Image (tube, rainbow, N blue to C red; front, side, top):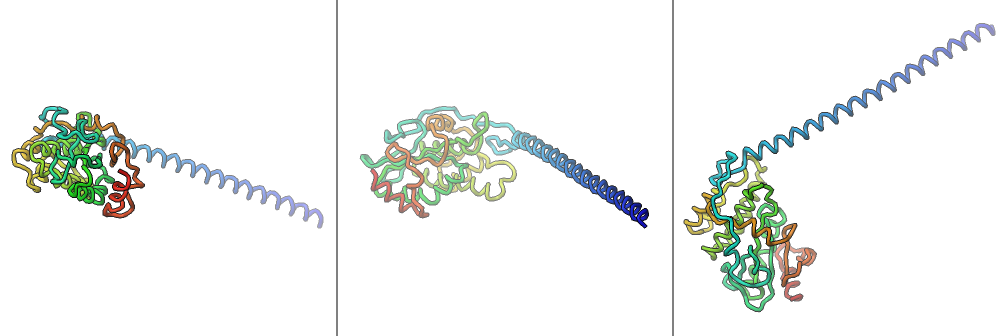
Length: 286
């Protein structure tokens, strides 16, 4: 009886050992499988990242629009690069190249002498700048019209990453400076329209090529800009001033707002959506 019990115990121990070995093998196989899966997933992710970078580079090369908006990769901006005629008034920082000021009549390059100077630096492809344009700029224009401030626009192209400054923010800024120079009453409406063109492009999924010079010209024509200026915008022959304007700005982010030459902290822009709080802050602190 005891002999049989001993054999039974040995058999049980062998069975337990086999079960433990099987369990360990299963754990090792599962661990090895997880490791393989992680490795494969990592490789696939790396491949996708590399493929995405390659696609982005190729797409940018193919889709960079020329002055006529054909997107064949050939940029034909023929306007002279210059820093002349970027400012008509000597107020605030507008004495530096790259500014457009507004007084009571809201004509470009005018001023309300002796009044606080509010300067706005914006890039046409900056989403926060579009929001500022919609929520704060109308109130600032009201203040300029009422003679409370001189408002100064500084169109910049800090988001233009092309080596020859041919992306949308540069071309739109070039266009707005051309309008300020030769059709100053149309700057405000054209400025809003150029923001809208980019916003609609992004809202539509940013598919295809970026808005072309012809589309910028069409937007200018829509708000009544003189035809000779529209034609120059369309064929890329307006003076190329955006680079100098951006370099002179000396800022790294947009929108940037100055009050009498000092940066206005965004917390003082107000939390409302119509600029009323910002107006009050400006009046109380200038």
